Length: 353
Image (cartoon, rainbow, N blue to C red; front, side, top):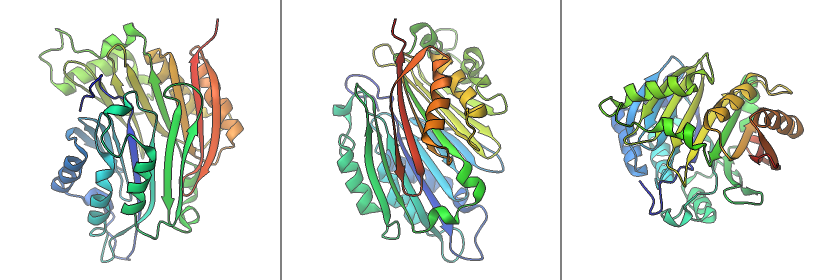
């Protein structure tokens, strides 16, 4: 939960993709995991479900520490604080093997990513060391995920390194649908939030007696977060005395926002799925600019994964979007990861006077 020096906003993110093995595969796939099984997995991580929603494509859960998304063949868990996210891996692999027909669901991709923690010394083993996290994953994953890579995409300055690990089965990318290859994931981390804007994520006396969903709805509407993607069903949840999470459902694409507003270690994140990639980033770049504007951060990092876009085009689109709210690009990098494709990473800070 809370770190010794303050609450750790930077999340750990885990994605596991699966493939059905038999002709009698249940179309629900991972969505068939029982509530009891999900509780078991989240208990091992150190968090719980506080709100849930779904559509015909996926289920979205707000957690006590961030969010969970469950598709038929993909599960994404994003947790903050001092949660032990990687404890979920062996449990999910074991339970997925019992779903989707006689042969179960076979893992085809594992992807783990995170930024640099604000309070690294408060993290339990193995999360204070990326090397130890990778070692844990290497032991937990089956041999068929043979194409593996771990890398820290670094740039100078505090909280400005992006840690990425991927492990993919042979031929995974060639087996994906063409449309799936066009999709990309945007992960945004923001610190040094504008104090006035961050104050909107405190309950205060007026919201003291509202439920988490009711107070969250007010925050979603009052801050403009509901308009980041006008097409999305935005479901916010407010914590007590402060803090906020939101999941957005837009057809088969999710988005999510998490806010730790306390002064001295304020943090907000925004994540969404976009595609297909356009030279100027299209509507996803517009959503990125709107999300950053809500928080007025002094420092921002943006990672874009997959989508088939050229690194120069991605860098340019992201720089244009974040630059529109008064931030300058300070560093940029790109690497390829098995099963994921290109991962770009950029850092931004307030424009120099």
